Length: 208
Image (cartoon, rainbow, N blue to C red; front, side, top):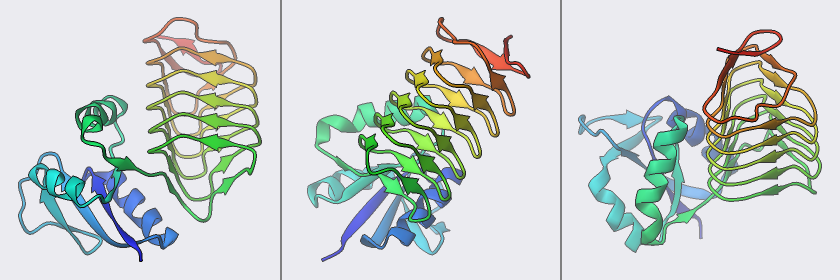
């Protein structure tokens, strides 16, 4: 019997997640939770939106959960507030993506359509690899990272936690990127980022 999926978050990323989840054909119904609920009549792709107060009911019913929030910090804080309740978090992996059989994914990850997770890549938890994202061989991703559409992480690079990589940005091979780094759209990172909380833009990417 197919289960039901509870999607936390009702913004733009929710649409991508819900569409991918529908394509997976693993769930018979979807419940959407808006952290800032105001509209009792709102629907997203035909599914009703509910307030956060409904979460406890869904936890008791042992439904599957996914946090569909694009902002890394809010996604992490939402998880921290829910983890003690025993929620079952799943991965949402679009059927049109490629996940190498020798790669490894934790929980709560989103992999959008036409994305690639290469051989021996390792993803932690609650990462977003958006449409056409490319995570190459032996790359390591920590937790709560966001790779925007068409970004590329080349082989054997290591990304810590809470990193944002903008659309069409490239991180070349064998680099290390410290936590809380922001890499602007279209940037090309040629050197490791050793200190956390840095912002980089340009070709080649420079700290600003």
